[in-house]
Image (tube, rainbow, N blue to C red; front, top):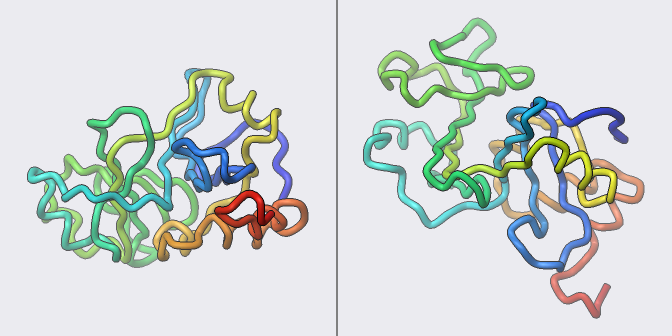
Length: 187
């Protein structure tokens, strides 16, 4: 699906031109916020080797496998963000901010006991992906990213192969990128 207009919360950014290296190589980013100040998101396919921070240990029982925090991006390394999928349509826990459908941001400052049982799935991210005002729009114009509407199964499913799966779902020119190997001479 070709997106016209500015990025929006709930969209995926799918990196193009694999093999260039760097943090965003083969990344799938969920946009959390886009406004006149810039854009924030988290990388959905970068499991980390971090442990859940001690002050958030109660939340670890809710994490969807792999039950570890993910690397959200290369900026704001002290930031911790959690995404959840509601357990049912009538559930609206305190501190909840909907991104799309039944997926949204979880307020980790809420007492764990107030939201226990409210989520079918949860992912925790340490650090963020971020762009200053106009920066992401410039990258989109230069073709650094494809965009797609996010789906819950892409956020909470297994991260391995996510980049390829989303590109195939998009079809057309995007699907061709999904066949690129890690060895550039084979492409």
